[in-house]
Length: 456
Image (cartoon, rainbow, N blue to C red; front, side, top):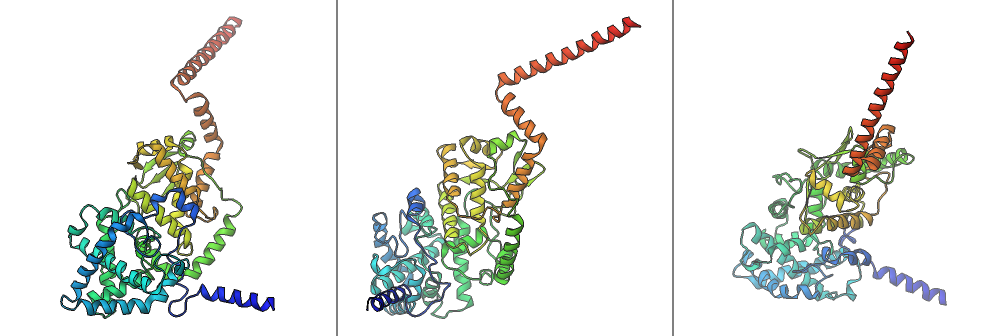
């Protein structure tokens, strides 16, 4: 009796977590809430300040003022498709959103029926209102028409890059096709939306990061799948076109290669690396990398580590943190390039002194309040990363750098610099001692020569 009740209760629990109809495993949980401890480390990096998109932050006090503008934006967007038949077009959008409801619910990583806006009508209305707002904002940006967004566009830009503040791409694509493509879904409409989004991000490319190539004429074939705006930006910044193609065609090959790499590196890959100031004592030099292939093109050869320049400011903090969070929540998307980059920066930067060294060499341009704030940012993200130290992107660089530092000559030089060349006084004392030793050797040699001469 009790067994049957427990069985039914557990079966009901499983069925309640899998919405019926539409979607597949790729849709499930592509827009998730971050773990509480991650968000609480720095809420300003993960929560919207101007506009909410999707159900997670729609009741946030900071985004309420923008809700009224969303209705005006919805009206303006619908007028683009049919100036005389807004009600009919709105009805078409609602019907389309209703058909996508269950598939869209699968994208979010929690039970929305218990969250704000989780009811069916509320959820469908949110898809239409927020989706049309995003599309109209992108169109206005492309037309350099920011009249209704004056003074807020930068905030909205970064709000659209937050991992918890996303709308499923297929919802945006359907609404875009209905209004801008006369309801005909196809390659041309998909190209138009992809170009709209890519151009939007290109106009506000992250300051101080390696510039990305301009959008290619044919974008639809470059991306195997797009889950939302942040995912598209992730593919543009983190994954090169070549890697995206390889990703689509050889996922199994990558898995086998990763397995072999894990076995080969298991016994010899170091788990850590000294920070910048310590590496300098071992004779490592740092240079800004000329003409890097990407922001992540870091190399170590012959005692020189070359790193692409990065401006660290409020905007790049938001972008890096959310790309990192996206990669951590969906680690199957690639080998963890952003995670590896932040692990590397966390290893190199322990204190503000390390940031100051990288600034002097043109690698970091710190626009935060001080060097300690920049160091804390890298330590916070890199220190919280979940990764395999034997297979991350810079595992080989870690090994080569540690091998360089472990050589006997470099260890002796590090001890010399640490114990005798740290301050001007210690340098002077060492020079005086060297001069006295030199004079003593010369004097001893002179005495020996005179003694031998007298004996003959």
